[in-house]
Image (cartoon, rainbow, N blue to C red; front, side):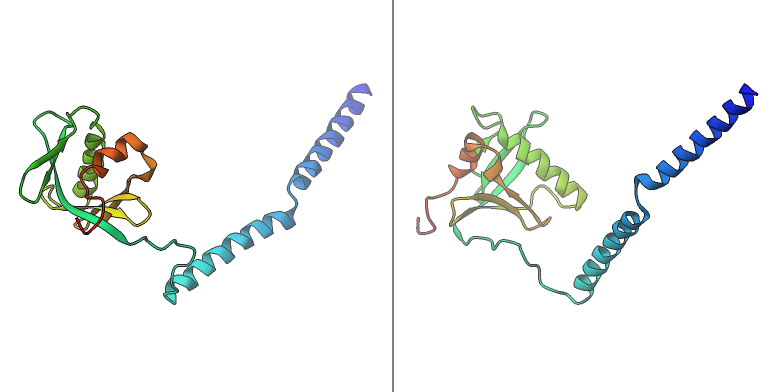
Amino acid sequence: MTDLNHHTTLAQEQRKLAKRDREMIPLVLVRAMFGLALVSVALVAFARITDRPLVGVPDTPPVVAERIIYLTPGAERGSYIVTDAEAQRLVASTDRKAGFVGAIGQALERRRDLNRVEMSEPLTLVRRETGRIDIIDDASGFTIELHGYGPDNIAVFAGLLPEDINQ
């Protein structure tokens, strides 16, 4: 008889656990979650189909200084050389405190490989009105905003630009 009571108690406990598991996440919340996901997808689809302009995207500050540069692989693996339009060497990743040129070169080379663009294509190095320095690669549609890489790394490229566009 104790064995029968034990089975009855065990069955009751299993029913309680099953009921508790069903109530852990109420069905209303699950439906609301999926509803929110569907509404989000519908809003994005509507915006894309109707070509709504992007909102909440900051305007790009105007350019106050620019220079055409070329970034080519150096003799050593992972090294890169920055030259100007007349093929004059400006800086290389092997120069003191210029190793960041190598990191930019690798990122650029990877992007250009993905877009099937030759490394011989020019880049535009710009200083914006806000002081931000960017490297723009029109050939692959890639822009590297240098403001997040630290002052020493930014200085390597900032030194290649005149102070303002009138110089």
